[in-house]
Length: 170
Image (cartoon, rainbow, N blue to C red):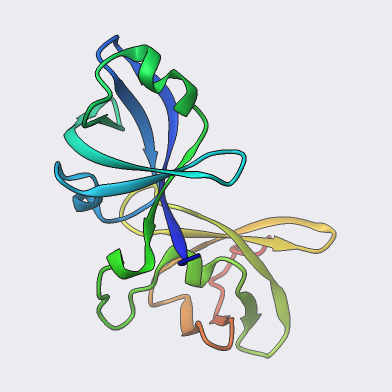
């Protein structure tokens, strides 16, 4: 089975004409362009190939419509399921750009060499991504992905080196 990567999650239906409300997990809005193929992964591991034939943004969510799914009853059972793409659909990235799946799971180290924790989630609240880092026995740290803080990213070695600014780790 080819590698697949999450690009969104269907959180609900919208209206009665088969539209679904999607929480985006990608920086590439073009994933949802009409004509593009997405893969719906069902609980049992089976997949369903879907062709996007409608996309609009409504109240911060992507609303998608799939070819031949024209009624709410056709898409009702998609709720809660992830939308994925195949590895060969990945976009070439520039230097210092990374896919979420490359960053999640990386160990975070201070410039002193001390291990801080492991990145468990990425938030995209606005100007820059924020890497949620899980620490043993302590609350999570939110690390903004900015040059001043993130000094080195080695996705092959699963290692991120940061220089925390004052107050970041409190």
